[in-house]
Structures are given as structure tokens and as C-alpha cells.
Length: 66
Image (cartoon, rainbow, N blue to C red; front, side):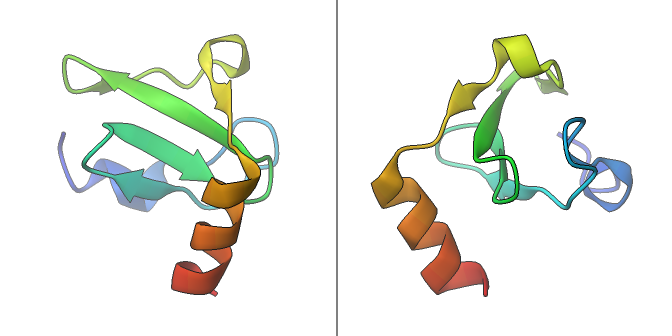
């Protein structure tokens, strides 16, 4: 995925910043608690395609990115 996209992509629900999870190929939104998949190097920024973050994932995000 092109790193320049990180500068312009935001969560479509909250317009908040996203965190790139390279291991799982997802863009994570702390504010909406959603994970948007990246398929074939293309972020799928549709809320219906996103999965809800688990409580453990939310806590990890808070501790690493706050």
C-alpha cells in the first residue's frame, strides 16, 4: 500500500485518523472502533465491510497510540 495514502485517508464514519496494522492488513479507527480491510493493496473504506474491534484490540490501541 502506498504510504502517501495514510496522510489523506480518514475513517469514513468519524473522519478521525487511521492506524495501519501491517500484520493484519487493516486500517484501524480508534474513534469508531472499526478495522477496515486492505485487499490487494487497496483499502476498503466501507463501514459495512469493516469489522468491529475487540475490547483487547481497543486497549492495545489506547496503550500504544495515546
